[in-house]
Length: 275
Image 1: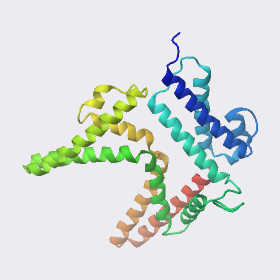
Image 2: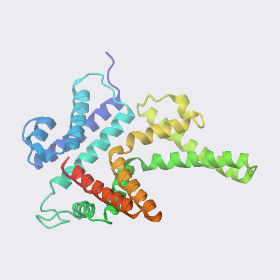
Image 3: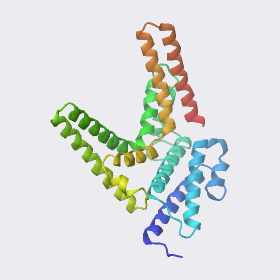
Image 4: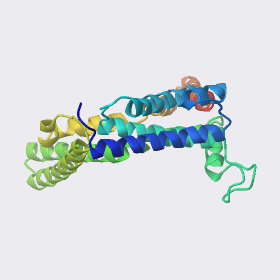
């Protein structure tokens, strides 16, 4: 059996420490028992199912590295673990506000919790529910916005270069090609860093231009919160259709669609509050 490397020992320590912080926070929230599972189950329905699934993922990974000799963790898996820990901590702070902190009076919600409550309230008010939908979209994109930006720059650069070549506008083609090459270089640097951290993503895809976009899209897709993005898209798309119907003077249908958009925001606020 191979002895664990220094990197594996360090990674195991970081995972155990982060999981221990979550377990300590569950104890502060009133969770009783041994381990993450028992403490989260003790809190019952006050823990939403989505947070429960993240806690299970955190606990499983922590147990794997702590109890299975030679267990390996890829860079992507550790990144997802860190995101899960951050999300759980944020949700626990929202559901169980800390009392008596220096930043807020005892018994008062923190400014962040007040903002979240305002957006949930806005989701139940016609018109303002569009602000709530935009907030959902922003929350969905925030974890992977860097990879999303790089992927958009590369895709836009390639499209610009292709259009410039087709129209024989070589300055445009050169500018688009430069943007694509810059995004390609960022993808190589990120991919190389991930491989050094233990990722086994195929190196040839990371290194080859255009194929490099597959790597960027993969990294982006792993980080985005797709469920929140779908909620926001449904609300905004239905509202956009209502505007189109109103412009076409189909006012009854426009009213129905606007009502559906508002109803979707109300449902989304309930899902994000109780599920």
